[in-house]
Image (tube, rainbow, N blue to C red; front, side, top):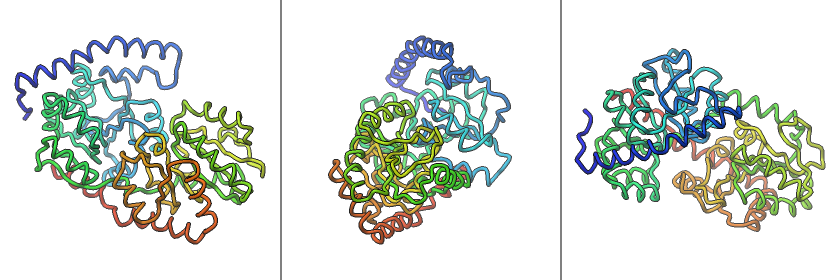
Length: 432
């Protein structure tokens, strides 16, 4: 039953919806301009953001999983594989808000699931979107919380769940500023699966009913590498002739992390001439900027897209393609996990851990603090704050291969010890 709103809550939702109405002409103009320019991802399919679905052969009564962008899509990969194992005929739809997220869905699942763009949170759009898709269950991954969408699901009597729920201290403060808008929203969810104790406690502080709140832990611990990832690792190794090189990986980097890595790497190659740095920027729009950054410093760089083998003079292999990071981690001796020296909260540290690669990170880890704390406690992860720290950590592990392998093995053990979140999540979903 849809919760009744007080007058104050009704006014808050009205003002929120009015804001979306005001923004809609601007978002539509933005779409039209990019559509006419034939920008990647701006096809007629993107009109699902306005509730207009043109995608063919989407099976109704399926499961809709919403992921904001690339990171969230990658995080649900193992969950989706489990759902397909349970019922191969189960229609699964993944919605994203970004083009890169859409591309990752198509890359990871190769037609086994469908993709749609998630609607803007205006009542008419979300109602039309839900009516046309008619899913039997909706799973919201991590922290994509929309008042009108969740209310429309409740009105349509479609169970909606938060899976791998994240609620940082910073986000909790934001939600508390608008209680009339967000407090009723939480009541629309059938269950909220918190990924950690911090998140569980913060949901409680926001007034979520204990009977609908569950500590399932982080589904990222249930990480598995696909056959495609394994094949891609071998292809990269042979295409770029790097099987004999010692490899450092700078993963999911943001500015100024590439420069910090370069400044740490260059002094090291005097001692380790066989050392190769592979840089994987987080966002594709930065590929060219990072390439120019490297060329501007006379660094010998190969672009992954050019498929040119690295020779002994190649210093940096720049990955300017999406969907290769997991495969690259499997080649690494040591990894830096980005978004941690840039203040972005740190990206997924479990991917290198899953293939026994020790890692370094900066202090910005608010996206996954429990994961990083567990890896650091196991000595699989070291903290760095500047170029000198990066150089020192790389040097220590390069000088001590046994210690490096022990640290990598410790990371794998952290995953094994903390697994099981997906099964707990599936049990909740199928029991309600």
